[in-house]
Amino acid sequence: MSAILWYAQTLYLFTKSDIKTTVIPVTLFSLAAAPDFKASHIPHTIFWVWLHLLQFDVSNQTLCPDEDKHNKKDRPLPAGRITLSNAKLLRWLLVPICWAVSYLYSIETFWASVALSFLTMVYNEFGGHAGHWVVRNLSVGICYGSFELGATLVASANRSVLDTIAMAAIGISSGILATTYQAQDLKDIHGDRIAGRRTLPIVAPTIARFSVSGGLLIWSLGLAALWQLQWDALLIFLAPAVFTAYRFLILKTVPEDQVSFYWYNVWLSCVHALPGYYRHFYT
Image (cartoon, rainbow, N blue to C red; front, side):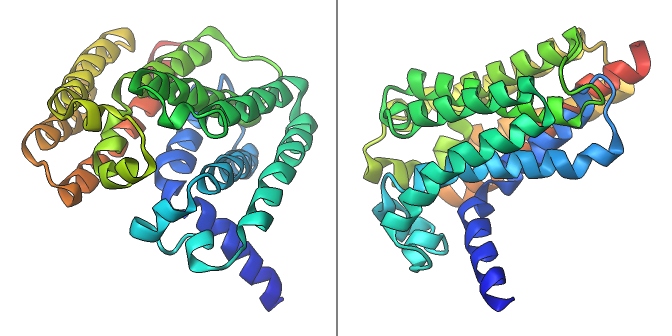
């Protein structure tokens, strides 16, 4: 039993830093966006998202293990919990595992998993993470959309089809990540320099901050109109957007950017709840 727990902890440590940025917001999004979600599907949704996140993170962390020695020493590779060769073997074993699990839900979920595996290779093995910041942001946005597509299918009563509200919400979420992903890059700037990445904060730090802050405000106003927020909901929604935009513009150290990124995820979670708000009041 102790050996099983040790290996389970190793798998968890691959994904630990992304639980708050992927598993929680994507799961919340899927519950809000699903046309008719079932409470009994929530554990399935969480597991599906985590399993595919594990595939992505193992792939990412085997590319440049030395990067994590500087700022994320508790990850399995720098901590010595797994060898690089075994991590690479795990990375490719996870592909058919993810596909098989997804096929059990529906053929549409299977294709979402296939797309996510391909996009994982584009971002990691094919160098999208280290390319021009535009390519990097677009890769992240589309990849994140695939996460949400699969998760929303798993959360839905009918796992074979999504309605226009769900599809619109997925497209919007992908657009937000594609235009504001530099919010994460600001706090990771030192590690990205070591890895040779050309993120927007490295190429143009001032533009990066203004684009994040402006993006939050512009997206917030547009979404408030699209989802027809009432005044009380509008004020609640705009508060974290304005606060987070202010932080990114004024507070510029790496620790401050880390806190700002937490608030960015609070705002993103509010964004993900909006399709559920619209379903409740207008459908």
